[in-house]
Image 1 (cartoon, rainbow, N blue to C red):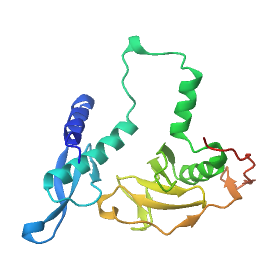
Image 2 (cartoon, rainbow, N blue to C red; image 1 turned 90 degrees about the vertical axis):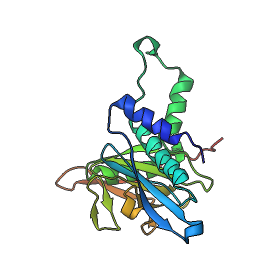
Image 3 (cartoon, rainbow, N blue to C red; image 1 turned 180 degrees about the vertical axis):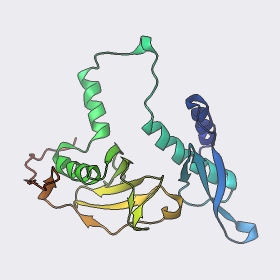
Length: 217
């Protein structure tokens, strides 16, 4: 485990002038000679829990700090000195940004489906992480959409996220809330054809994906 995550998180909080990280043990298990720890950290009134458990409290704290740092730095815009601003990004830079923030073109309808679903309750897609080794994407959700199937209501502070499998056209919900850290909702299908309601009178348009397939290089 990288031992710099706590320092990175501390420096980020100082730079952003927000409350410093507060660590606490979430789970402690095992016999006295072989105890394992899971830690959560609170930053700016939001909690982040480390994934998995560790043989030492220090390692568990580094894991929690990593989760918090990655989420916070993805959410906050980078501060660039005025003299370093580039008013006209190159074509390559624009393409690189698009790849980082959207699904590949052939899966546009899937991204639209998730965006429409969360937008109906005041949410939006904050970040789409690159696919993992199994080809699944992580959709971080921000705004007021915090609906959690585990507790049957929205979370008060902590956000939720979706794991999306574009090949199988399925998704499921998970949480950043410490009490729901091990929860995964039932897998749901993303229909090939779906309906979007655009106003209060429920005048709806049926969307059918028509984008041509292309090979991801």
